Length: 243
Ligand code: IPE
Ligand code: IPE
Ligand code: MG
Image 1 (tube, rainbow, N blue to C red):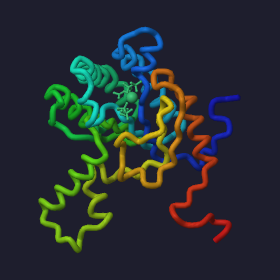
Image 2: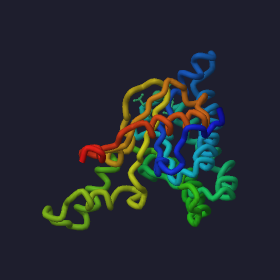
Image 3: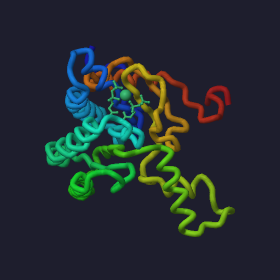
Image 4: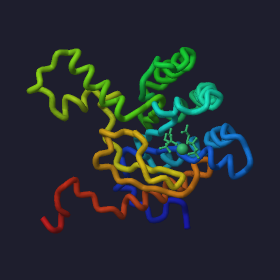
């Protein structure tokens, strides 16, 4: 069976989110330090990006570091900061050549090393005109923090209570132009959201897989898209044929 068999290219998810989980367990299974699991996740990420490009998906958002991940041992946190900077520097030109727009979502400048923040800004500037795929890296990201930041900004603007509605909040999220994710995939057999895109995934289809992130490849993304296409999305309404 060819990789894309059974996928209806006219009903693709517009925006896919990925909770890249299971790096530590992948390493532990091999008797390696946790950081080796993170390192092995690099291939999974870029194969998934290739898969998204092959499918023609326009938006991919990946969870790389949560606002809660600061609770980890200091050596692991330090590794992740340096590793993410390194990945960015090594891949940004290739991503740019492929028409990928790189973005970051999360709290910037709060504990994140200044040099990494500068590389993030440079990568966003470098790729800002690309439109083939928007790759958003959720880094120092928390869904609750994002909502808090949106509310802070509308309070700071002096918005009266009567003007506070869903649109007022949605338009102050980190990237208001991004469509809500249609599909969110979480690896490693955990059935939870862990503070990823809380506002945006109100009606996302969730796919959970036991595959550990370092083993994830584009075929796993294609499988998730097939599952997505078997779902019946209702958004609180009724099925069209029953209407
Ligand atoms: C996901 O893998 C990567 C990050 C959260 C940075 P984990 O490091 O959470 O791996 P497990 O869940 O411990 O296996
Ligand atoms: C979610 O994974 C965050 C990322 C993948 C970056 P975690 O491993 O941090 O989530 P929990 O702790 O299992 O909920
Ligand atoms: Mg984890």
